[in-house]
Amino acid sequence: MKFFFIVGTRPQFLKLAPLSNLLLSQNINHIIVHSGQHYDSEMSDDIFTSLNIKKPDYIIDSEGSTPIQKLSSMLSKLEEICISENPDKIIVFGDCDTTIAGSLIAKKLKKYLVHIEAGMRSYNKDMPEEQNRIITDHLSDLLLCSTEDSLEKLAKENICINVHFVGNLQIDLLKMCIENYNNMDILKKNNLIENNFILLTIHREYNTNKEALCKIFKQLRMINKNIIFPIHPRTKNVISQNSINIPENIILIKPVNYLDMTVLERYCYMIITDSGGVQPEAWYLGKKCVILRSETEWIEQLKNNNNILYDFITPLNEFIENFSKIPIIPRTNVKNAASEILKLIV
Image 1 (cartoon, rainbow, N blue to C red):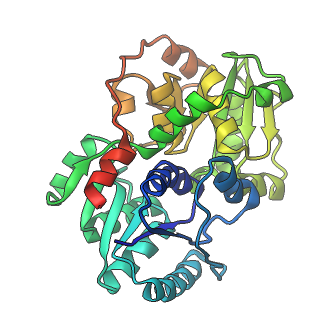
Image 2 (image 1 turned 30 degrees about the vertical axis):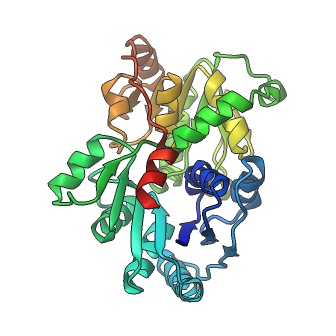
């Protein structure tokens, strides 16, 4: 049995890590293809080294200046590799352009398709991620869900066969990092006091334009705490190109590796983010999380008062103060996702 993993973004690399390591420990053959979607030394290369992930067997150089051109290039090159390797099963993660490219290649070449993190829905079809995940779910042969409510969402779309709740691979990875890594240098380097700073991440397309960023920074300026902001390349480019002023309470730093990111998450006071991956991590760590979006796929974390969608009306400092007073409902036991997935794909 030969498995073919197609990944291309940081969140996908993170989900791949615990599963790939488990496969390696059991001498199970698997090919890793890096789509090149996010090929940045600060955002991707370091992940394979710091998390000891099997290096990609192939790295694609996706060409083009528009999303469609890049997707077309990715499809062509993925097809060539897939025909050469002839895998038994193709496995894709999440909802980015790499996901939809892998899904289309699998079905055009009549390969068995596995979708990890199936059934996530924001019900905002203007989001590229929503478009990708819907198409991928309807093409997949085996759908592996990270949340229990994803089963219900798929059932509403008449997807009921070979659908399983397996848990979240990124939580597997987070648990591993908590057990094995506690280097506090990232805090000392930036003069951060434990549980007295806010962690900020912004990278979504609708938040990374001049108007949106100026509005967000105006709100962040009113918060009476230091805010550490590992900046995504897209966000950095928009700030630079538009000469956007950064509030004095924001500490702007380069992207950090995943291990240091877990330290920032574990020792912050609160998290403000538009990231999908950070939301369940905040929930697992019991850190309050304000989501800079009008909708989210991660519903369980809202229901137990751990995470909340920002209303973009209330002043953010007031919103945070009110939210911090609401007690969190303790989470239930968390599955070992890698083990659950292995049982179903082998």
